Image (cartoon, rainbow, N blue to C red; front, side, top):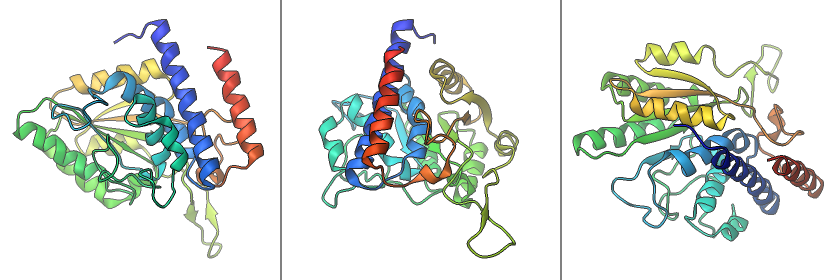
Length: 288
C-alpha cells in the first residue's frame, strides 16, 4: 500500500499531535510514562488511522481488528490515539491518572471503549492476543489481532510461552509489534553492588530469537510511517506463521531532551519542560 503525499502529511501531523497530547497530559497529571509512548507514537497513528479495521462509532463491532498494548505503562500514548480517532473526547485526556478517571495509568477495558484487553503487568499482552487469534480461526471471523510489546515486556517468560504456542498453531492472523527502543527504566544489576546498574541492551538478537519460535520476522524503522504501513500489510498477507515487526525506535522520539535518555521513561514534566516540548513539536509541524 502506498500513501499519497497528502495522506502521509496528515499521518505525520497526527503523530505530532499525539506526542503533544502525551506531554500535556503527563504534565497535567503530575506523573506518567513518556519515553515509551513517544517511541510508539508513529506506529500507533499508523495502526489506528491507516492499518486496522476499526469503527469508533461501534467499538465492539464483531469483525473489528483487535489491538493489545502489552507494554501497558505506555497507556497515555494509546489513550491519545483513541481520542484522536474519535473514541472519546480529546478533553478527557486532562483526567489522565485521576482516581475517578477512565484513563488510568494502565489500560482498563472494563471502563473505556476501544480497549480489547486490560494490561500493565509486563509480559501479559501476547497471551490474550494468541487467544483472540485462535478464536478468530475457530469462529471463522476475519479480524486480525495486533499486540505491541516493549523491551522490558519481552523479558517476561509468559511472552515466550505465548510465542511458542502461536508458532505451533501457525497463527497467521496474529501480528506482534516489538517497540525496540533499546531502553527500559532499569538496567541490569552489576556485580559492583546493590542499586547499581549497567545500561546494557535489554535483549540480544530479537530477529533470531523470534524466528526460532516459528515466527515470520520483519525489521522496520518504527518512525518511518510508509515503511511501517507496508510492513503491516506484509504481515497480514503472510501465511502459515504469526508475524512480528521488529520496530527499531528511539525512546522519547520527537523531543530533544527526552531522546535516548532512560530517565525520561517516567518522570514529571515541569512547566519549562512542557514549553520546550510544545515549541519543538510546533516547529516540526511547521515543516510539514
